[in-house]
Structures are given as structure tokens and as C-alpha cells.
Image 1 (cartoon, rainbow, N blue to C red):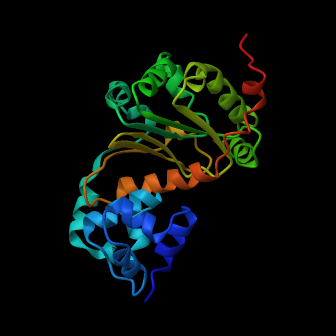
Image 2: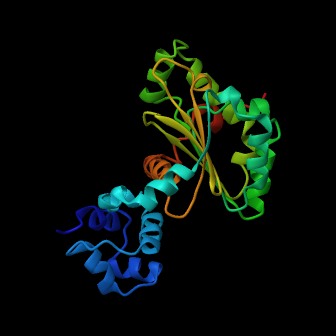
Image 3: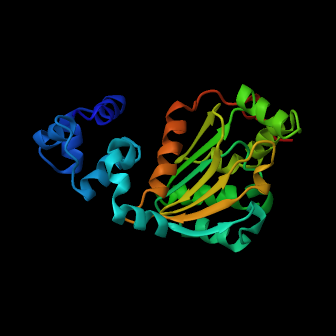
Length: 257
């Protein structure tokens, strides 16, 4: 049976079978056999392919979900569960920020608690980018329906959009730095995601409750595990549809009073 998911993801990434083969280090005919007749590749090739296509290997090959090693590795990726964001130790945020060398990904609506609690975070992100780390910040578009609905659900009205604009002001040193990419999304935010190399903090969202009141999963990526890759694939889907050009009015006008 043909693997239409793999075929469509390759096409969606604007790649060819030969491109994928070259990136993964296999023969193009091998990739073709992954598509038709739908053979399941070796574990290392699954990981590399899913990473290249910005998706979850279990989405591309659902049959691996029953693999015991995959299940065990996925369970082991959970470092700990915090009952709410306030229970996450303050030094943990700083240690993850300080320790990240390759990438920092942030998916939030406002994420205002970071510059509030760590006033130096913008300069730190700028310094990380200067040292070669890839920094991607996906914030909510304050003019979007998604942000408006979230404000209504939390009974703070325009407060959610205002928090985003205020956060942008605090993040100016990072936003203006080369190597830091900022985009605005208008998606429903099911989880806030904070990725620091192989560590990830996932703040779950509950209808009608502020993110600070909801649980946080501390995950650490392990070979063969699915949890980090699953959430990372979600980040990538939001990132791909987010807009880097629709800078909110507060940022465009440079309101720095």
C-alpha cells in the first residue's frame, strides 16, 4: 500500500525523492520503495526523514506506534510533570536558556512571563543568535480572531492582545538582532512550546484558564522517542503558516516611550 502521507509531505516541503535521498544518505530508489509499496525504513532513516520534513515519524509510519522500543523511549522522554507553570523552578528556565547552543523555539500567544521574570532574556536571545544558535519566536497576532477569542475565554478581553504588544516591547533587543526570526500566528494555541536544543517545556492549555494555571511537561529528546518530535512537528506546522510580515502596529510604529 502506497505511503501517501510520505509522498504528500515530500511535495509539501517542495522536495523531490532525490532531494530526500541525498539528505538522508540513501539511494533514491530506496525512498521510492518507502512510498511504493510503502516499506517502513530503518529507525535512523525514519528519524532523519521526519526531521527533514518537519513532522512526526509516527505520522509518516503509523504502524511503528506499537513498537515496544518506541513506547519505552517515548515514556523515558518525560523528565517530570509540573502541576502548573508557577511550579517550574525559576533556575530551570535560566539554565535551559543558558545551555541552548543550537536552537531555541518559542510558540506562545504572549509569553510575557519570560521578560517579566528574566529582564535580560532579550539580550540573552540576541547573544545566542550571534553565537550561531537558531532562534525562532512565534507569537500570537494581537489583531487575530484567535487572540480575541482567547481573551474572551480567559475573561480578560483585550488584555491578551495588550500582553502580546507589551511583550514585543520587552523583546526589542532580540527582535532587532540578526539571527532572531519573529513570526505572528493566528492559530488556536493548544500548547505553549519552549524548545532548548533537546529539552522542551510544554505548557498545556485548558479552556477558560490562564496558561500559568495549567500543567507543564518537561521533556528531553531521546533516540526513538516520539514526544518531543510530536510537539516539534506541531511547532513546525504553526511556524510554516505564521507570517513574518504582518508586524503588529505597536512594533511597526516603534512605540518605545
